[in-house]
Structure formats: C-alpha cells, structure tokens
Image (tube, rainbow, N blue to C red; front, side, top):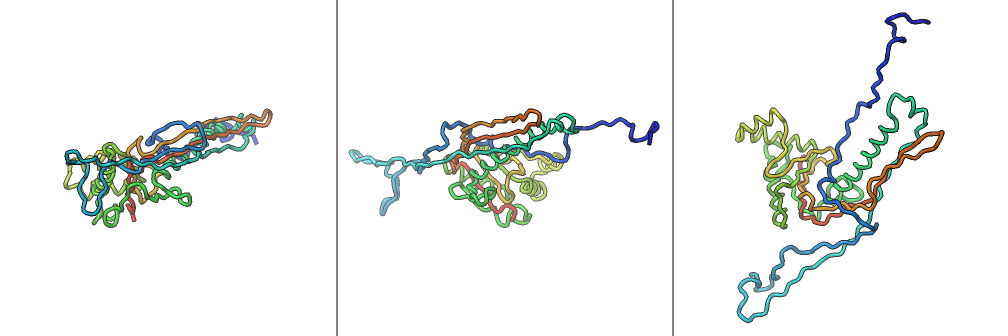
Length: 301
C-alpha cells in the first residue's frame, strides 16, 4: 500500500558503516623486543654460558684466585664458553573468502576494508602471542601458559595478590628486580606485563591495603585508577597476557624478533567475480638473554 507523510517506509535512512560491538586489543609485545632481519629460514646463534669470569671453587680453595696473585705466580686461566643454538622461521598467514563485486559495491558495511584491517590485526596478534610464548618459555602444547626454566622465576608471596591478608606485590616485584640485577642486567625501566585481573589486585593492594601508609598517593589512584609506573618499572596491562602470571622484562634486551619476510598484504582480484585479501609474515622470536626476564607465578591462585 502507499505511504503518507510520517510513515516508516518513506523516511530517510542514515546507515553507519562503521562496525560496532568489538574492541580490538592492542598488539604490544613486539615493541618490547629487539627487531632485526634474517636472510635465511634457519638461524644459528650463540648464547654465552657464563656471566662474570672467576676462578673455580675447589676443595680447600674457596677464595678468588684472580685477586691477590703472588709475585711470579702463574695467573688463573679462565675462558668463556658458548652454546650453539638453531632456530627456524615460522610462517604466519591468513586470508579472507572471496567477496563479490556486488557486495563490495552496495553493502551497508565496508566489506573489504573491515576484513583487511581485522585480518591484519589477527595475524599481528598471533605474532604477539608467539613473542609472549618465547619470552616465558611456554611449551608448544600450551603456548599461552608460561613455563619458566632458563628465565628467572619465583612464586608470588604467600597465597598471591588476590589474598588481601598475605599479598605483597611490592616484595614480588623487588625480588624480580633483584634476580635480573644479579644476572648483570639493569632492571630500572623494565616492563611489568600483566593481565587486567592482576592489575585489579595490584590496585586493590596499593589502595586498600597500603593506602593508609601513602594517603595522598592512594587518594589520587582512587580518582584516576591509573598506575603507569611502580618501583621504577613501567606497568603494561594487556588481555593478551595470561592471567596468574606477571612478566618482568628488560625491554629490547631479552629477546629479538627476526624478520625473514615482513608483513605483506595482497588483494587478489578475480575480474567480474570479486576480490579477497591475503596477509602473511615470516619470522621468529629468539630468547637471547633469558636472565633479563623474570616470571612471577601463582599470582592469583
């Protein structure tokens, strides 16, 4: 039937082509590691086995034989050792289905543009999680669950940060800084990487438990809810981080992302039919300095 003024079928329509409903988590781990290129898919690299050279403690000799050497005595002989390691490039690739030329022309949403953006971010997220997996020594079976072995690690004080009566995030962070410094790295300015759950309990501890000791600071945090730095460390909160763990890392020192092929995007055109998007990158993360990392475990158990 025909419509008169004010009826729905003849009203104007404002179509918002920007898709709503999902916020995209930032991919940030890559900014914490060194970036370099590799010309081959197989990479050979060497890790140093010892830190500061000193004489070996033996039966009856516990002091250093480098200090206090007697006149005309032969010097202590020491040398550094290395372990040869081999890593292999991993390929990350994703593509869209073919979008018809009709859909791209008259769809209410930007079909090609939205998929190009989200496919790129999806691939970047997988690279981000690969970096997280390497620096936390996660296994292939559980790539998002830290399994520290060569990196520094220690369980959170008592029952974790979520137990108000016994929690002590300050001690846990200071212990991690101590472990990193003992290994010869400067922990000042290191990253404290945590899930929003751990961030919540850190704020709760600082405001509710320690608030009376630092009233002005605590009152400020009640208003802003922001902790960007603590104990000389930069706090980074990401949903990409696994809950129950807090990672302390010396930025641009602990690991390297080796790029074999950089991020590449191709729009594949099928004339008269449509287009699809293909995205790929090849590279691998190498944990070169494991002692520049500390993993606080059992944080919210």
